[in-house]
Amino acid sequence: MSSDWVVRCAGVGKAFQIYKNYNDRMRQVMFGRVKKYYKEFWVLRDIDLELVKGECLGIIGRNGAGKTTLLQLICGITQPTHGKVETRGSIAPVLALGAGFDAELTGRENVLIGGAILGMRRQFIIDRLDSIADFAGIGEFLDRPVKFYSSGMYSRLAFAICAHAEADILIIDEVLAVGDEGFQTKCLKFIEDFRRRGTVLFVSHGLPQGLCSRAIWIDGGYIRAAGDPQSVVDQYHEALINEKDDAERFHIGN
Amino acid sequence: MSEQRALALLGRKKDVLLFTPFVKAWHYRELIRAILWRELSQRFRDSYFSWGWAIAAPLVMLGAYTVVFTSTLKIGDSASSGVVQFSLVMFVGLLIFNLAAELVYRAPTLLHEHVHYIKKSIFPSETLVWIALLRALVYAGISFAVFLVYKLALTGSIPLTTLLLPFLIVPFCLMILGISWFLAALGAFTRDVSHLMITIVPVLMFATPVFYTTADLSPTARLIAYINPTTSYIEMARQLLLVGALPDPMVYLATFAVSLCLFYGGYLFFDRYRSVVVDVI
Picture 1 (cartoon, helix red, strand yellow):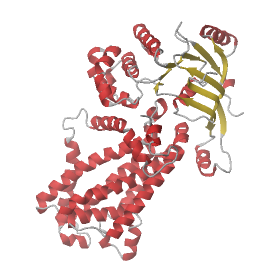
Picture 2 (cartoon, chains in turn cyan, brown; picture 1 turned 90 degrees about the vertical axis):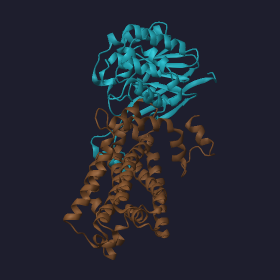
Picture 3 (tube, rainbow over the protein chains, first blue to last red; picture 1 turned 180 degrees about the vertical axis):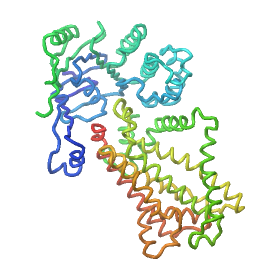
Picture 4 (tube, chains in turn brown, green; picture 1 turned 180 degrees about the horizontal axis):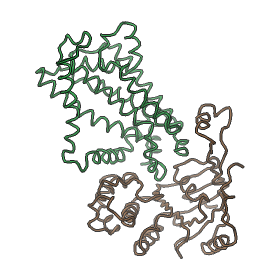
């Protein structure tokens, strides 16, 4: 494989510890070295992945397949149970839009907070306030408390901040669905532009045509298919029709 | 510059040293500032008197103490040094105690409250404790300013030793930070920590010389009171602010050493469970 990787996952697995009750969790903290008090729920297993600069990886899969966990692992938010996740360069995570927003504060004030959480310096944000306002396109609502925003306006402002982060890797978790088509087009255009200077990981149930250079389909914690986006999406859709949507896949234990 | 590189400049990457928390806090200063500003600006939003309330609360409390203790109660030997003086003695005790109490109350739920930050963005969770401390310090600072004005108005003087207060506040804050990191990490695993604090802190208030001084205690009780490090801070603050005398250097050094240990120990605990905590909140 190439040596100029930007994101690399080697044999990555993630198990969450499932406790029968709260006391077991305390026991695990105190006597964890002696005995195991939990059952494991494997969210991800044997994930091998390598991305180079300029790639856009689309990730698809059913609910609970492990898509968000994979993104969290790559961001370094949570640690893998085994295997190794490595990244080169700074990451801008868009796992939830406006997670740091304060409903009482105005949009403008929230931009400063949201930007700071993405690692931007205060002066850097202030210099780009006009550009952020322009991208969000919410007009005078920028100076109103965000509790009066519609959910679309909320997402617009939140994504506008993320779009101004100076990052090498952009990680987007299915957040664009709330915006109207005009805004979605704007976001997709931004992602395409971003690919010229960085790498994108993109989770969605439907991959927009031509956006991704590669796609993976995660099913039950494993990568079930990988490669050309169109063929992966086709296989996924076929499986959705043929396989039943039952509870068996949320199995706890080995 | 990334956090790793900032730490690499110090020569060690993985090890947690005594100054590691400071390096990291400095590295994340812009983030700390933004969230602190958010917490402060939303506190009195949509209220007409806004920050006037932050001044009114300590002022009313001081006034109430003076009135109550002038007309009714006489407690212990310290009452002989003047009733006005006694309300100030209590106020200094409360000021120090409340600073610690606010953090101890908040710390166990701190990570739960900010779960969105921690799970949905690349967020250094330890900064939450710094932010909580700075927020508490802002309110304590307002109370302190009220105290100074009140003391000046009633007794006509402020001792010069007041200027030495930062030497007391800095180790005190380090101690609270350490305890808060410990409680925050522990509180992530079980909510009982939060309930425990709500239950025992009011009791601790009576075990700490807030409404009395250690001079009122029997020698044995005094020894027990000093096990609680907050006791010596309150006593030393009273020396500086009210008596105008320097605290016993041995007591100061011992308290400083204990505080430093709590600071470092608390941080080590937090650091050790940092990555586990994400999966349980």
